[in-house]
Each structure stands twice: as C-alpha cells, then as structure tokens.
Length: 468
Image (cartoon, rainbow, N blue to C red; front, side):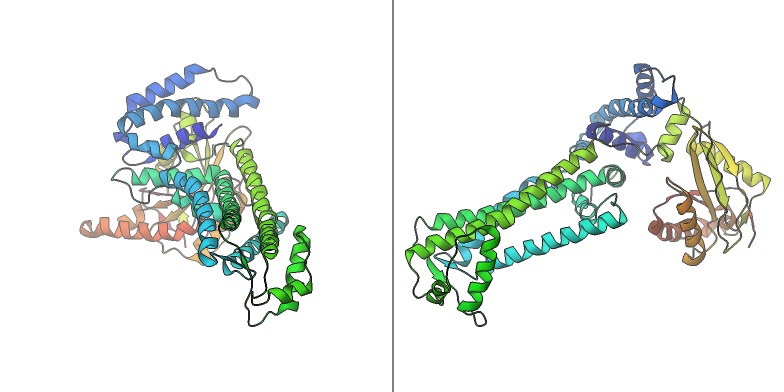
C-alpha cells in the first residue's frame, strides 16, 4: 500500500469512527463504496493472497469515500497533503539554515577572519556533538533493536497539522495524526531528520559563501585574540584539525605573526579563507549531505512497507461484515464474576464492536491482585482480540490494574482493548448525579489507561457481582 492510499484509508477511518462522521459520509455513500470495492476484484481462492486482497479492498473503498468526504468538506485535503506546517518545515528550514549561515559570518566578522570566530566555533562544536550523538544512538539501536518511531519524529510530527481546527474537524485531525504516526512514523521521522541535516549543510555552505564573497571587496585581517590560547596552543590545535581535512600546512612562526592580528599579509587571508572553507565543507556540509541522503533512502524504504494493522477493531469489523474471517474476542474479567445476563450483554457488545460474525470467548475471571492466566493459542486463519474487562466503579491502581494490563500486553502481539463496565456504578447512583459521576469516573480511567497505549471503551452491561 502506497502513502496516498494509506492516507485515504486513515482519513476515512478517522471520519467513520468520529462522533460527527455521519455529517461527512452518509450510509448510502458507504454502501455504494463498499459494493464498488467488492466488485472491482473477486475474493482470492487461497489464503496466501488474502492479505493483499484485504488491503486492496480497504484502499479502493477508502479512495471512493475520500472523494465524497472532500466534496462535503474541502478542508480535509490538508490532512492528505501532509499539513501546511509540515510543508513549511521541509521547505523553510533549509532556506532558514542557508540564510543563517550567510548572516552569521557577515555579522560576526564583516572585514576579518577571526581564527576563533564564535559563530564558526559554536557551529562546528554543535555539529561534532550531533555526530557523536548519532554514533551513540546507532550503537544503542543495534544493541536493543530499532524503535518504531524515533523521539525526533514523534515530537516534530506534531507540527504537521494545526492544533486547533473548527468544530467537527479537531477530533478527526487528532485521530488521523495518531494513526498516521503509528503506521508511517518511521518514514515521517526519517524525512524530518533529513530536513535537519539538509538545513545544517546549507548553513555551512552559507558560511563558506559569505566568507569567500567578502574577499571580493575586503582584504582580510587575520588573527585572534584570546586570554587563554597563545600561538603555540593555537598552532597545535589548528594544525591537528587541518590534517584531518587535508588543509594547507602552516608553521609556528606564522601563528606568532598572526597573534593579535597585527602582522597579517594578504597571502594569510587567502590561506585561512581556504582553510576554514575546507573545514566547513569536509567537516560539516559533506557529512550532513550524506546523512540527509541516508535519511531520504530510509524514508523511501519505510514508505514502501506500509501495512495496515488489521487487528484494529475498525478493520476487524469492516472485514467481518463483508466476507472477512470473524474475530474471536477473548474477554478477561478482572475482579468480576459475570452473570448469564451479563454474558449476553458482552456478546452484544462484541458483535457491535467487531461485527456480526465475531464470537465471544469468556475466560475465567482473575482475582484482585492476581496475574492473568496464559492466553489460549489463536485459531488458524482467524484473528483473535483480547479484551480486559474492568468495573468502572473500581478506582484504578497502578500496582494491580496497571500490572494486569502490562502482563496481558506481554502476551498480545497486537493491540489490547480495555472495556469498562458502567452498569455496576450506575445502579448505585441517583438520577440527578448519575451522568456527572459516570463522566468523572470515565475521565479518571481514561487518564490512567493513557499511559498503557490501549483502546478504551465504556459499555453499560447488566449488574455484576464483585468477586474481590
């Protein structure tokens, strides 16, 4: 699946799962798109090609619904285009780097070559720290394995879309952003890192350009002034650095003559302009351009490997309703003993969430404070979705509820869902305060579960008896 198709799928997913989705896409439009996608290609006869057909069906359906949604609300096009701030970042930051390099050298030393120029020294020092950090990150990444989304990409990608949209688009934008970073986070992060490297390379080129341009109109005064570095120390430092980049050699006598900049000649200006230009080009611009190229290659490699998470409840339900395999939903009650009426409510909730072909498998409840039992092996060619069931009346605790969720996540290769039963708490509340108290407790649970990266749903079931 390419990026354009993936964006269409995630945009339609965000619209259909949003409370306001009905205002963008009608049921008739969804039925027509589904029928067109199903008729475009027959279902595969073999299981080996089932995933390819599945993603193609979802993509064809989403592309048609995307056109309908854009006709209703053209502002959604900003999500498909990557966001205006992202485009500004990728184009404006390199230009800003070039401008900063030009201005820094002109502003700090307009008519001279300062061998200890603050702008040049700080710029070189910063790049050395970046190279060292990248080396450490590469080694640590080899030791612990690659992360799905780097912290750089996860942080900077938040600039991709406006933080506040008009009513009805904010929830869709946030949901799309979360899904897109989960699917294409590595590719997005690699592009952002490539932009940073390109900006640094252009900044170095800007400094070189400013340095050489000044030579057409100014005869350089070369020297330095330092309280702590004398001619011998400067000769040792600069000659060592010059050897690394193959710069022209110079003697200690040359440094003694240049100290305080009182005996410099015109030849010194040419020598040191070339020395600094060589250092900036070979020590900063070239490595940064190489790193930018590697990041672009990495982004393209990740972009060619976009595959939907078909265990997501949205895709599970969509496929189950249109010929896909039914999902086996494993419900693990925690500190609860469901009654027969409660089990009927769970079965209805399973069909509502995962499609009519989904089946409920209720596992034995886990006592308060205990660890979950090992999950049964999934059936062949049938997706399995574990669901942890808590009572909304309970107060979430990291040592018990949090530990239960974490232990389940170690057994689950895909995503874990958490359902919160509100019926037990609702039965003990007066009518006047029921809505406010339920909303307050739901917010408490959602805030608690936000640290565990699980999908959360509040469902109202028949009263259950607390087993703790």
